[in-house]
Image (cartoon, rainbow, N blue to C red; front, side):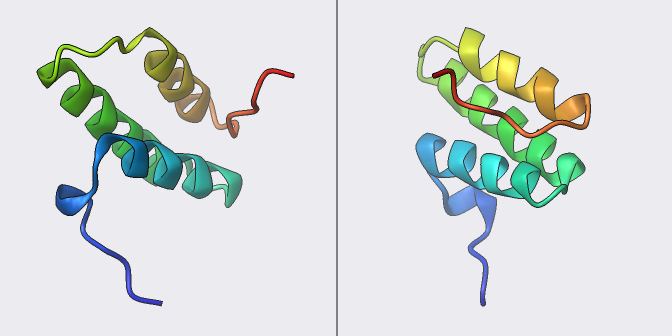
Length: 68
């Protein structure tokens, strides 16, 4: 499966890709993708608080779990 470069992904795609990476225990990649999503969101003056929480989860070596 060929992967697109993160530079061509939008904010939602980056966040989803980060979640998938974390679900597959690739927390380093998850954190990098999530950080990029946060940077892109901030550049578009979008809120990043929840995105930052996900980043911290990935950095601690855990996948993100939706609140239910």
